[in-house]
Amino acid sequence: METRSMGDSNAMYTLDEALSSVGFGKYQGLLLAFGGLGWVGEAMELMILSFIGSAVQYEWHLSPGQKSLISIVVFAGMLVGAYLWGIISDKYGRKKAILGVSTITAIAGLLSAFSPNYMSLITLRCIAGVGLGGMHVFSSWFLEFVPTRNRGAWMIVFSCFWTLGTIAGAALAWIVMPNFGWRWFVALSSGPSFILLFLYSLAPESPRFLCMKGRTNDALNILEKAASLNGTTLQTGILVPDQNQDHCNEFEASANTYLLSRRSDKASCSMLFVLFSPKLIRTNILVWFLYFGNAFSYYGIVLLTSELSSDQSKCTAIALPSKNSQNTSLYVDSFVTSLAEFPGLVFSAFVVDRVGRKLSMIIMFILAMLLLLPLLIHQNEIVTTTSLFGARAFVSGTFGVAWIYAPEVYPTNIRSTGVGIASAFGKIGGMVCPLVAVGLVDNCQQTYAVILFQVTILATALSVLLSPFETNGKKLTDILVIDDH
Image: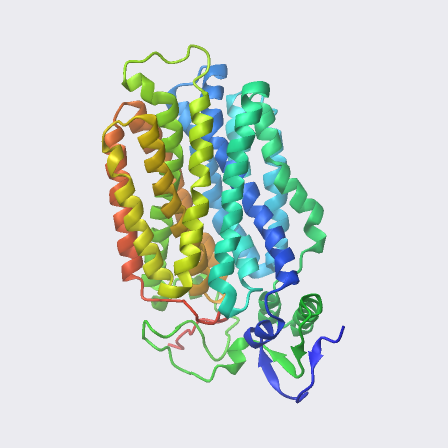
């Protein structure tokens, strides 16, 4: 099929113009499935934290602190991995980072199932966390194939794969753990990462990254394949990096103007120098807090579901099971609250391109905070599950929008690094969270735990409000302006 349109063969066009011509079609659909599988794998690996703690605690006679450490070491590994894979992605390419992420997650995840003792489990889960920390590369990779006008809605669709992973993880635990134990559950949860390795050779490199590295012919070949598969045409002319079309020499200090572009690139400027330049300090701090607060709140609700299902009876003078604190209520509550993410994502998809990224997140944060109000006191299972269902719906919705917003804020040359560091702050939030959700609820301090989550949610909403950028409808850019003095 002819993939080039007739026109001036000497005309120049940018990657954004090329992506608009290619459109969103079958090609992006296949990329969506591949990248989404990465998020399914991450979600399933993290859902492990909600289920195996009590089983391992009983088998190896662990203390509550040792039980919490199983979750903490995963997030510690993710903290390291988030930064590491961001650097690798921006320096060597999205595809190579994806290979490393999938390999480490798959192997360490599977080996965890064969852990002979507590220390080996802790070590292997931490290594798996290093791999999981790079899953943000999938979102940056997919984002760079999507035309501007489709970006908001399709990135929300991409986020749905995380929800599919949480549902699959809860369903797998419900089926496997009561019958076969936690080891089979852990082993089967590594399946998506192995599938990614099998399909890796079919995945293309990001054309935006290739253009950044001066490999425009390689980028053009990928765009031609995309146009062919989509049944569209790619204009004739010369594909040029977007920054070469930017004739602005100054950094526009307006919140209504996308501020992350410049006329020329300086090879001597390291990615970290650019990322921590004065022009991005405010944005960095607010995005970091957005990820920290969002992750703290999200994992708080996930772990709160687990803890209220397994431990609330202790606080109401009802005897706990003598053998294993896992019970049917835990699986049911986890499965039902995982389903909550779908309406949250549908809501966010509806508002994200209509009211913008920032207002969408603020609205959903406030709604999530209000839905946690009934849990300030102990409630029956129906009220508890309903409240957690609603709160998780909106917090997962804000997570979906945040995963659009951060990659849009940062330019291509530091996108994965910027998102990786922001993601690392999210991992810190996830690492601290088990100490709160498990510790406070385990000590019958549910009210204080819920208040802390509500305060965090409101503070996170404030950080979004103060953020200087609204990225809705803006083109992705490649290079940040760096002053010469």
